Length: 266
Ligand code: MN
View 1 (cartoon, rainbow, N blue to C red):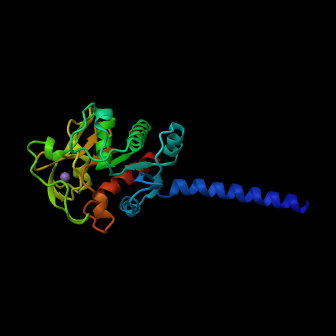
View 2 (tube, rainbow, N blue to C red):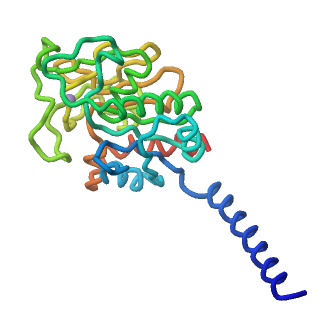
View 3 (tube, rainbow, N blue to C red):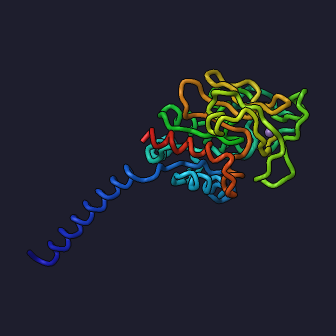
């Protein structure tokens, strides 16, 4: 056997051994959780609070860059076991739920809207577990036919709670009532009332067909939704990652449930 042939054989044997290991790791290891990228000029990035919460809950975070190319999204969805849709900018009301823009509508990012809507619809169609947070919850509602308050203070007439807090992200400023026998209720260990943080001026108005509301603030603003007929697609208006990433375990069950769903999906 000449030297070259020996090297080639050894290389082939190693390649086979490594690919075997990889497959084994994937079966025995932690689930891979996609985290939708936010809009930062020139970056494909997501805040560490989301990334670290996935890690703390037992998953492997993988940031998904913005794209509307369906082949790219398909390939990414093949690689992940679960998905977190992150918070961020306002959603274009005219394009996604047929309303003129309110005077107080904030910044909209058309390419992120298109990416998020496509990603979440394709993920749900493939049976991939999805947790939507803040904008992620709102985009979940809009992607499946629901509407939003574009600006709570001017559109939700009975609202009296401050939903845009001036306090640290791991500090709770308003309470929510949680629907018993809902995903959120179970994830929080069976509590009907809990205090949450609040960083939003938009909120779910009409819930999408096939979804139900599972938590409200005292002024009637929707704080959580879930898809009926599955226990692995849901969203929250508050920011559990603000608590989980700082070591507070009160909301860890929300991320743990995503990991459980992802493990079942694999
Ligand atoms: Mn709120």
